Amino acid sequence: MIYTVTFNPSLDYIVSVEDFKLGLTNRTSSEMILPGGKGINVSTVLKNLGIGSTALGFVAGFTGEEIVRELDELGVQSDFIRIEQGVSRINLKLKSIDGTEINGCGPEIGQEKVMQLMGKLDRLGEGDVLFLSGSIPATMPDDIYQNIMEKLNDRNVMIVVDATRDLLVNVLEYHPFLIKPNNHELGEIFQVELKTREEVIPYGRKLQDQGARNVLISMAGEGAVLIAENGAVYESPAPKGKLVNGVGAGDSMVAGFVAGWMDKQNYEHAFYMGIAAGSASAFSDHLATRKEIENVYQRLI
Image (cartoon, rainbow, N blue to C red):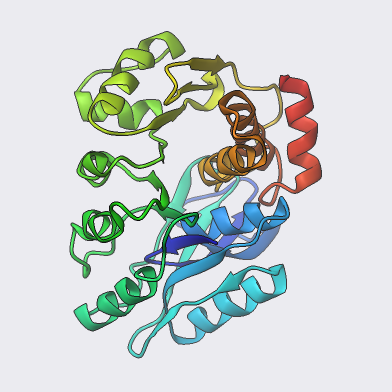
């Protein structure tokens, strides 16, 4: 079974505003409301590829209820822990002003609820896959990723970690199957600036030396690099296409990679499936469909 964890799910309110003017009333030209959060995005793309998963995490209030309802509509199974106080966050994303977002805080998550999540994860074992993605709410312990991976250590669970800086580095000793920093995050870890695919390779190997089995480095328009467990290095420029919506592209990449690996147990195929899924989502208003991913994949091979 595949599980994704989203500690702080959201409703993403994605809008376009033509000729945005600060300090004045602006009206949207398009808008969407979608369930959001990195783990939820992974579950959605996996579903689009015909692979089932269970989305775990915490939800609260009327927004939490809407997150669950919308996932049900998408056909994504969820098993969230309900928080009695507060509401799940709403994140505002302005499509017409590239990269501009206003993200909410979300509810306070107490230790009792954290332990409930740990109890759900305790059932994982050999053959299961777990995605740990995104930041940790301020009300949760900052070593939660480490605690989860320590609990599951030696159970042969395939764990994918998509996080930044200390959250990522501190789990390497537990040998995650896959980590996915981008080139900026990789540079921050080692305090260097990395711009080209060639430059990221030695630093990706350093993370592998520290324990990661496979290191997938996303580089936006520059493409991506995979340093695989078998010693092979794969790299590719980004496929050509119009950037429509960058939200969830990185999550789509890790979903596509794992889907590709599960399909053929071949790192090259998994790498190109990851690039195809990430790019297809970036070229679409929504998270990529199977057909969109397959179309990009055929252009890569």
